[in-house]
Length: 219
Image (cartoon, rainbow, N blue to C red):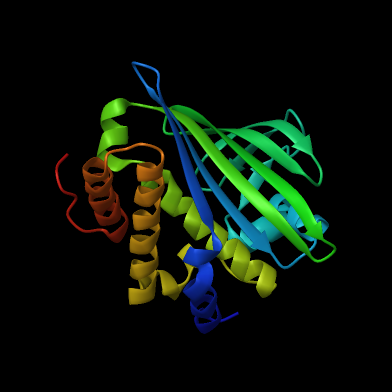
């Protein structure tokens, strides 16, 4: 597949995803859940295979290695690793998400909508330092997952697609706009969860700057 194909997928991707945020103040930490939902024009068995097969994950997400079974461990090349906590083919799985000395939780739920359409709901749950949450908000993880679902959408529509972040597309103005739009949508979701708009927009600015590689405003 070419970067032109990926660009075409990206045009409607921001609107194809529904984003929600749940926030609970636990005192010393903030319990957050960033959730993304998207429907795909493929059956649930194919979507399950795309999300769990190492041979397919490397084509749209990243190389994933390990003992990929219930109770086993996994490692994403250059990223998180952890333990496979639940696995119910083809309806979902959950894993611990261990990266940089921190542990959070990731769950993926699949639902068959028809014989050739299915829905994915991804939830990333974490206990976050209140200062970091106020500084960056849900976009800190949400933009990365938006890029991941872009890769999945491209892969499902065009078998053999490469991950968005590993192509020349990532350096284009369209990619910059995609990440900025994702950051704004996550700020919208944070406001919907009760975050004051002024704080959410300030977090949006910092997170956008981080992803675009520009100067990050001080919190």
